[in-house]
Structures are given as structure tokens and as C-alpha cells.
Length: 120
Ligand SMILES: [Zn+2]
Image (cartoon, rainbow, N blue to C red; front, side, top):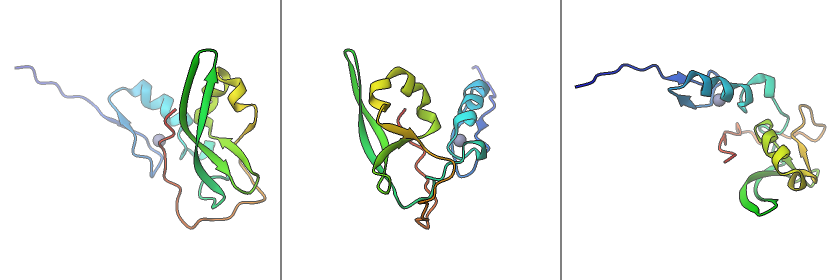
């Protein structure tokens, strides 16, 4: 029998529930975590933010991922987590903007926006 004890690393930013055996993976995650105060965006908790689907197209590569639409500005907005996709699919993101840190149109939806599943 082989018995192993392993450490589990948890994201320290509540209410994020991400965990991993790999410390490296969690360090990378925390840097881009939606709930990391350094990544705070006005869209978090805003009633103008709606989930949507966006098509990623580049050369022969095409897929659909979860995205976000601002009903006030009428434009798709993307979280920090999507930045590597912006580099990979520049055409898709040409008409999108990064989620702003401050926004004059912010209106609370009275819920904490807890969707950390961006599928990216
Ligand atoms: Zn997290």
C-alpha cells in the first residue's frame, strides 16, 4: 500500500472556491482571480452585466465561450482572466473592452456576482 499526504491549496479570495494540489497553479489563479481585490472591476455586482456567448474565431480555430455583455454601454466586456485570449483572438476582442475598474453607470444588482466560471 502507498499512503500519501498531500497539501491542498485554496484560493484566499472569498467567495472563490478554487483549490488545487499544485501551489504554482493556485498562485497563477490568484493573480487573475475575479475576487482578488487587485482585479476588482466595477462590473462585479452590477445589474447591467449579463452573461452571453461569444465566438472565438482565428484561422481554422473556432469555438464558443462564456462572455459578458454590458447592457448600459451595449458592448461586450471581458475580465482580466480573458487577457490571454485577447492576444490569441485579436479579431474577436476588437469590439470588446476590458471590464473597467470604475464605471459611472454602475448599479448594484444586490447580489454578489459569483460566477467564476468563465470557461477560459
Ligand atoms: Zn480565486
